[in-house]
Image (cartoon, rainbow, N blue to C red; front, side):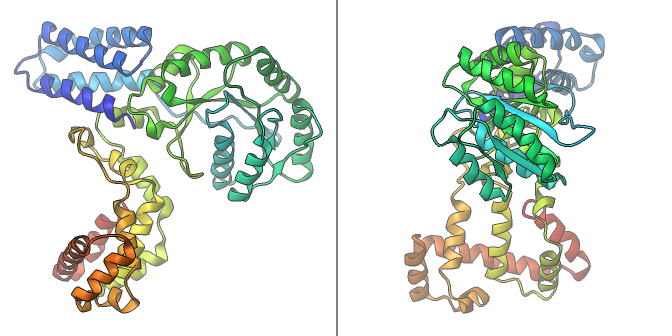
Length: 442
């Protein structure tokens, strides 16, 4: 996410850090370059202009010009202004004093609206809610079928009525929720390939009849300025409460994320970071600003790790490490924990300094899949005693996993080095070492 924007900003910052002395002239030059980078990232030109003006007002003050580390101080100012641009703080979904809370989901067709509805239902259930999904998109072929399929995947009921109109479906679903003790109603409305009056009127009618506590506008982040223009058109008609940016995992530029709040003056509340139904994150402006500026996002990384953390498994693993019994089977378990956290590129993107890696260096998201395939192609005895894996066995494992003997050799060598490190660790330091090792995997 934001790879291109982050790397270009890092190039500018590198030059800034190299300045022996900061003057108004080189601050102005730096800000011109940043403005160029923002426009290249498809940030709204008015937003980019105002952002640069706000940074410049603070950056040419005497406190900055006389600072011992002026370059770092300017970068800190840019970070502060970017957080302000993105919304300052996380904004929660509003809830009803008397259930059910009604959440209306709107957006264009193809924005990921229906999938977001299912992701949101799964997310809210994890927070202790008891949601109901409502299939109010009666226009798109198979829209109801899609929501019902997604509902089954997340084990959340879907209210649907193929014989009724969208407004009646939405209204009836609220009564259904009350009778079935569902405290949250998530209404998936119809979208179109472009904004039209029929769609807008239908959504406006649903809003009028259901009086939702929250209206969320879903938009594809990869559409850049089109996303901002669409958001403004929807906001003029619906006065929505928050924005959801989907497909942010594929957006290397970041124009929509940096522009949309400033244009519609409504907070971004969620971001979609993958296709899986657990790939939904609340929007934290300070964390996103940190990622864009190459400072990483360790807090989100740790939170993801804690979600996947299994205390019982960790205790057993720690005991095996104490006794130097760490096997390829244990290694495979740890790899699977890493995969639960998302793609390797997403996890790496949360580490500080990743924007300093050259753009032509690719993070292979299939690396873990290949390692898993190699270990799964081994017998139980081979996983427990890798030392017995001779040339014949290596050829068989390579053939079974679709890899090469060289890759098998590399995996076994790395595993041997890991085992030697485990044996050298003292008993007193084992728990701390395990915690450090588990940070990106639990």
